[in-house]
Length: 122
Image (cartoon, rainbow, N blue to C red; front, top):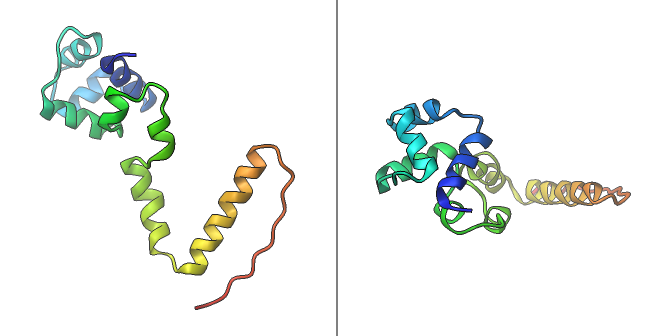
């Protein structure tokens, strides 16, 4: 898949029209269309704006055809919503989050899971 197709897919995944993305990055709808179809290429500045608006990184856009990078690395919005709050927790809170994640991963994998946890106040 080409980078322009990945940009189009990322736009659609965000639920944006070409016109809406154009408004976010200060381009006309026709310009976004030409980028997605491969007729024209965005400048580095516009491409950076597009990646930020679509919450994707350069690795996704240019290389990551199997999405392995996105499975292993947090996106900017995931860092903001998940990683930063996790880092603000104390050790007991982080242990609880890890326990819940392990339980949910096992549940989603079809395993019958129960757990208990005792939290120590530090």
